[in-house]
Image (cartoon, rainbow, N blue to C red; front, side, top):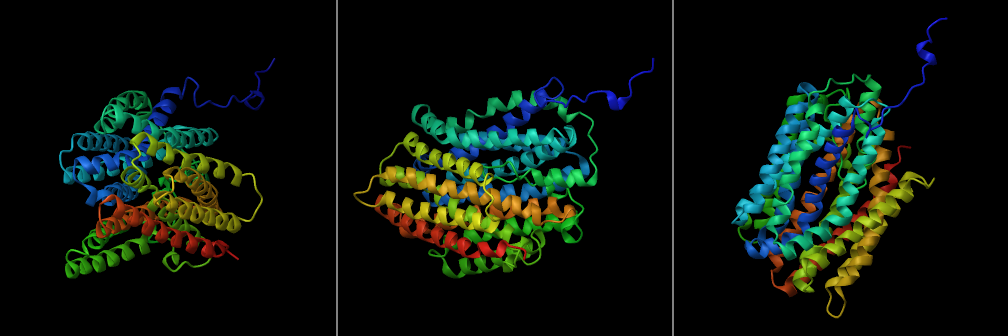
Length: 490
């Protein structure tokens, strides 16, 4: 008798919850869930924090600081992970995230809270990118899609329950425990990931590597994009050089921060603030020209416009989403729990839209247009929730419609961008999607906060400011609707 040949041996595909990968999978999912929970929950407690810390003037910047810091960390962590491995970026990210949570929970002034939000953003940005690289290095290629599907659930579940849970915690224990309560849960996640941090890497070929970097975007129905491709492809030019990318990320993040500071202070000191706005725009333009594909800032047809659409969607949706709890609590006297329920409905619509878009054969640019139109409709309906004589619960159906549009549009944009990308540029273009995503949200929320500061902080003035914000964000979504046809390559 002869020994059976290797080809005759049945292949038993590893399972992500099998003995070989169980602890790593649970640890990864727990880390992402905690980051997602924090991101989805902070909006509900921000109105309470603003009252107790007298920080209503920094309401928008508290969100923008997190996003801008995450943008910088995404790019740097991706480059770091590619060249030195994912272990150190992951550990640094987790430590920064935990420190930021502790600082936020203990903050006694609004300046300390704002700094804590920036530290959280640095930690979250480093950690998420390192996790995507960890998946590419630790799991075999045929198992990775299942891990990414798990990551999708790790974002969606907190989006559905996080706001309501955070509201309940704030009502019962106080807003500080929304931050403190997450810290102990990080320890078991780290313990579970110790083997993965020391595990030898699988060595994928070039096509697998770039495909994995791109696929990090696909399952992410929450809208937060992994940028594992920050250095994952072999894209030529400035986007392949670590120093150039680091300088560009610094210019983009710093420029966005200076720009928002200038916009926020224009009504107080017009001349210095106008200079700050100009400097911020110059720095931002320089950085984005390096981080994004050529022609993106001009909305050139095809891939450049597709990537920019991600930013337009994020700006229109999150530019309103961040202020819904403030409007409902200050104008309609909702409690944090009730306001959290209103935000949760957006996640339900988002999940539904994401699921349905994958089952339709409609051309991508038409799906993108439909998604943008739904976001615009939801934003305009949400405007009604602060009007006298109208119940604040109008925000619930409004945000289901807006979330539905995000589910259709954002997922289609991600898939379309990867299809339009050459194989050796999928990683870099996934990172570009992440850049526009975060910048769109950061700039829109920062602008909204500045408008609230200019108009006033009384309930009636907050209602007026919310109406203005909704009108501006509906104009952005209208622009996305009109530009959708330019996502076609032909």
